[in-house]
Length: 192
Image 1 (cartoon, one colour):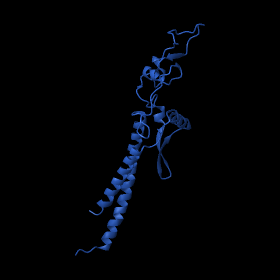
Image 2: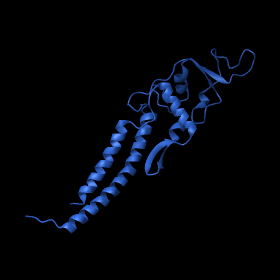
Image 3: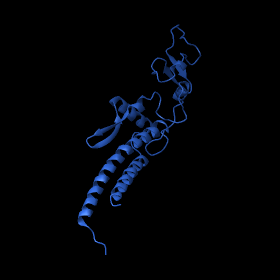
Image 4: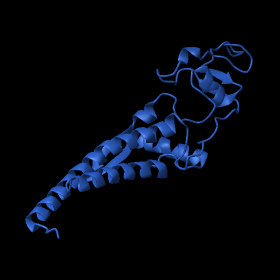
């Protein structure tokens, strides 16, 4: 019959607890980066809401787009002043400061070099770039840098009637599984 050495068992348990805590913390640090990347890709590349459905489609309702209000991250050189007719000037001779888009915002996105097949909320990249990792006490957070970007995000959620800027169940599950696997491996490795 094998005997258990209480001192060796205590040392193995102590070592196991320390390794588990360290591995868990390392797994959280690595997994939060993966979750952060997956979160941004889901929204700004794949165009999916937090439930995995398409965010929506871009409007094809005709609009006028200001020529001067677009930021430098879009191909604004493609925007030319014109109305419903091809005229660059108004009947009174004043220059137009907007371009008529018969195909709405969907057409605008194409004109400035962005895809328009699905809503991906990426035009200039400023909304995506304002999402950052942070810490609040001992908790890791994903949030926006400014209140203005929070308002834009909330406006998009209201417009499309979907939860977009929340961690999805798949993203959370992947994060939890990675942390659990690392902690479990570290715990049992102390007894080898």
